Amino acid sequence: MDKPSPSDPSSFQWSFLRPQYWGIWLITFFLFILAILPWSVQRKISTVLVGPAWKYLKSRRKTTIRNIETCFPDKSPAEVEQAGKEIFLNALLGLCEALNAWYSPKWFKDRVDITGLEHIENIKGRGILFLSFHSTLLDAGGYICSLFFELDVVYRPNNNPLLNMLICRSRSRVYKNQISKNDMRSLIRHLKNGRAVWYSPDQDFGLKQGVMAPFFGIHAATLTAHRRIIQISNAAAIPLFFYRTGDLKNPRYQICIEPELENFPSSDEVFDATRVNHIIETQIRIAPTQYMWFHRRFKTRPAGFEKIYD
Image (cartoon, rainbow, N blue to C red; front, top):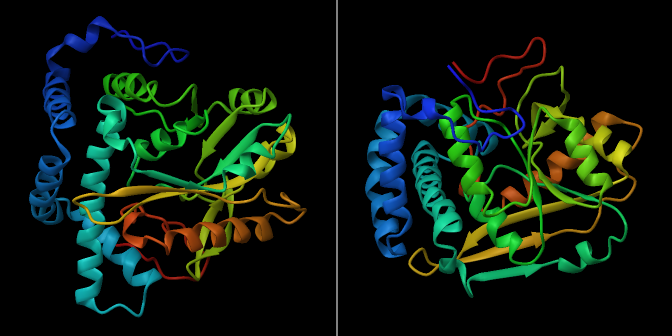
């Protein structure tokens, strides 16, 4: 079977018309319809789907519950479940917001506030590596940022070539360049050319690519690749976050840009990992249920420590 060229994941292949892909095309059609519906309808659909999603996405539900129990030990079981359902709701709303960013961007008109834009404007002659995290806002966060400055994104290619093509084509409406997480040469080249790149070092890829550092007080495998990227490219490391605020019936979107990290990276990779995790944790606490807690953030455990997930 022919596959998309690795150099052009957005290329169409005639094999995508085979029956094995018909289900994806059907889902894509319904998602496009969802994208052109008014927010009031999108919100109601998301609210209705929370119950079935919470019931049938058992693995995601269990992971979410364990993460909340682990990171917020003061919450009661009822509070944990309530937070979990809010996370699922925000994920569903985030899908709608991403679709709006791709196909109905006018939804965001006059709904976005930004602080810290001067921290980008102060960077002259260097690239910027934005350090962020996996928000349920998904590509809506990238879009609202693009209203103020141009940025590229590092992404994980989807294993399904058709989905990968559809996502890449949709994201091209938001990002100037999409860089595979496996293509560090391109990432460094873009930074050396003065580009701004969104990078999220908040997932567990084991200790071959990272070190153990505290995250919400729990030892977590933390990526260190961004340290080397910054060293090689001489890019500025700037924390970037975004979240939804206000009433769900009439939400607003906040972009928060923090000052460039000084003396980063240092000579101590554990110190740097701890520093970045603390920055991310502080920002997550602003809107904790808008973080993707359904990822297995603590799947790598130190020797002698009990597993967090079944």
